[in-house]
Amino acid sequence: MSELQQEKIGQNILIKLAMLVIILAGVRAASEILVPFLLSAFLAIVLNPLVSLLMKRGFRRGLAITLVITVIFFVMLLLIAVLASSVSEFSDLYPQIRATMEQRMVVVQQLAAQFHLNVSTTTLVERFDPNAIMNVATLVLTQFSGMMTNIFLLILTVVFMLFEVHHLPYKMRNSLVNPKIRIAGLHKALKGVTHYLALKTVVSLITGASVWLSLLLLDVKFALLWGVVAFILNFIPNIGPIIAGIPPVIQALLLNTVFDAFMVAALFAAIHMVFGNMLEPRLMGRGLGLSTLVVFLSLIFWGWLLGPVGMLLSVPLTSITKILMETTPGGSRLAIMLGTGRPKRVKGLTK
Image 1 (cartoon, rainbow, N blue to C red):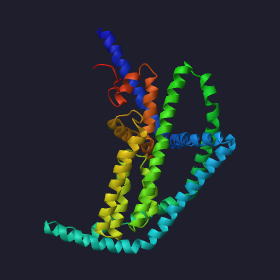
Image 2 (image 1 turned 90 degrees about the horizontal axis):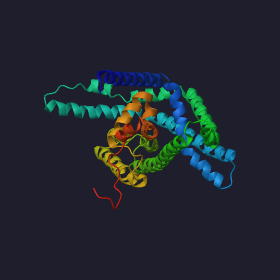
Image 3 (image 1 turned 135 degrees about the horizontal axis):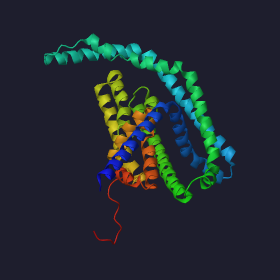
Image 4 (image 1 turned 90 degrees about the vertical axis):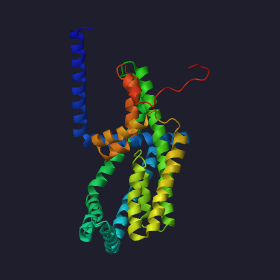
């Protein structure tokens, strides 16, 4: 290979990297528009099988979509009601939480003194003041009207997407170059993502219900709220269940006993072990064909690019990117790098 050819290859790589940086910067700048669109798209992917199921039972598409969207709307209202009720109850319990925290911090100060460490109880209480949680929750409630407007626009977008799905194959067949290859790749991506999101939703519902009932039996306050949090954060791979378990453990340590806090921690560990490491892999099989490292890195990347919603949708977004790469000559090698490793051996073939 001549020096001129090597120089052209180097220039092409630099140009592609520069284009990638520009695209990512544009996506991040437009995240306020893209995030609701992506969330609507994935909600439509999850809800479309329910609409199809109702249509098989004899319902027309419009009526089936109306029934599904009505249920989703009431579920969202229920979540908002749970948040409002929890904030009100927290305001009533705040003096008790503050007093308990001051008592526990005295114990921490005494333990630190044994190691010749000077710890100020007042400073610790101010830094770990539970009122910060109250302020955040109050801020959320003050933006209630704007949030309701966003929910309305989100649901409206989902409705139009569910109506448009019926016409999508025709439009793609008549608008794409090499439609067979493109439609096959898109169908594979949608099928994998639908399967993943549907099973992930079921497992998350089971996880949230288990957390709620278990905390209720342990007499831990805000059990329903922590169940909802566990349901939502279970969509975040690897670290989501861990984050969901931290607030209930701290709360049990403050409002209950050390033994109760230990039981709550053991409960979350057991639920994550059973549902996250045993039930979920068994239901999903090989999943979306992504390596564990890629799943974790995608969590960081999409979270940086799109915020919390990007973390929730990191696995489906990476899977769609990988499958679409497989349909392009230049991206097929990159798709291999995102995969799980060597392909599964076929029986009867030698090494």
